Amino acid sequence: MDVALISDTHIPSRASRIPDGFRERIEAADHVVHAGDFDSEGALSNVRAMASRLTAVGGNMDPRIGLPDRATVELGGVTFVVTHGTGSKRGYEDRVANIVREEAGEDAVGVAGHTHEVMDTTHGGVRLLNPGSATGAAPAERATMMTATVGNGEIDVETVRL
Image 1 (cartoon, rainbow, N blue to C red):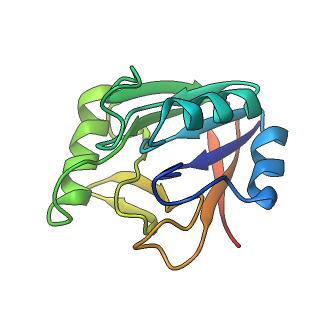
Image 2: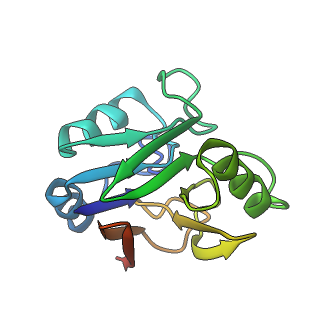
């Protein structure tokens, strides 16, 4: 199963659209995970139209679009816990890892955004992924996303940069 991991699109406040190279990957994915900060109902609708299946959470810029703060989804035998990671940069990894543990335990994979910085690390026994900003919204230096191939409880992650 191919999963597209995106976050921090910030449309329309910081970008006009998701780059075409990412749109193609999102449309081809079996499932899309968006870790928040769509920035508008229109951006959420656009991602929903591209995704065959979508798991999404709201970010600190999404107070009115009706998304949960946390979502858990099992894909290919891998449990993903999705949250935006809202809050100070200090303690970010602790905060996100604690949410993952609360929702699904240490064997789950956390997907978060907020910092606009790509991250693939293990923190306190929990794997954490941050795909950066799919539109390159500041403070990101370029547009990034992640793709994951999942199956039989295994996950292989690639960072894609434009």
